[in-house]
Each structure stands twice: as structure tokens, then as C-alpha cells.
Length: 93
Image (tube, rainbow, N blue to C red; front, top):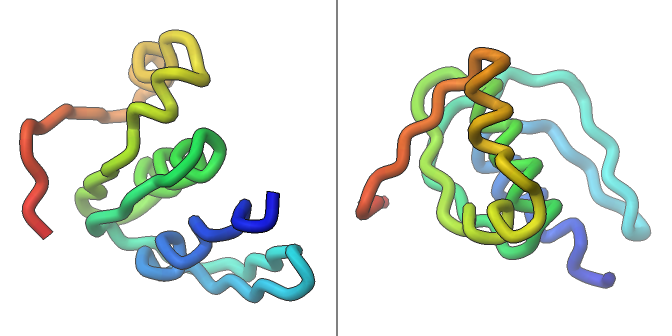
């Protein structure tokens, strides 16, 4: 899938140090900050969800419906291990 690394731009927006070359991504340690991000596929949205849980501040994820289709009871499982999730009706960038 040629665009599988497109979510790297969203991770960079959160402060991630990522270098993409030849369809490979190399991550260097960095502190993440919460912001508005948009997932465009199942795995990319899941990576943004995990990054949002690690980030300082609030992360607003558009595209969470991909996650719901691909992972059974994922939000409940995340809450069971201490993750804080809240659904809002409208996100303002």
C-alpha cells in the first residue's frame, strides 16, 4: 500500500521525529503533544490513537471510525488499562 506512511505527517504534527525513506519510517525518541489529527485508514488511525494516549495535553482524533471497524471493543480495552478517552460531537481546529 503506497500511502501506508501518510499518517507520519500527523505524527510529526504531534512532535514525532520521523524520517521516511523508501517506504520505511525511522523514529527517533521525542515528546509528543496533543493536537488535532486525522486518520485515513485502520492502522494509521490506531497509531494516532496510541500516540494521542502518550502525548501531553489533549489529542483530537478524526477518523476513529476506522478503528471501530477493525478492533473489537478497543476503547473499552484501553480504558481498562488506564487510558482516558472522551468522545466529542464536533472538533474545531
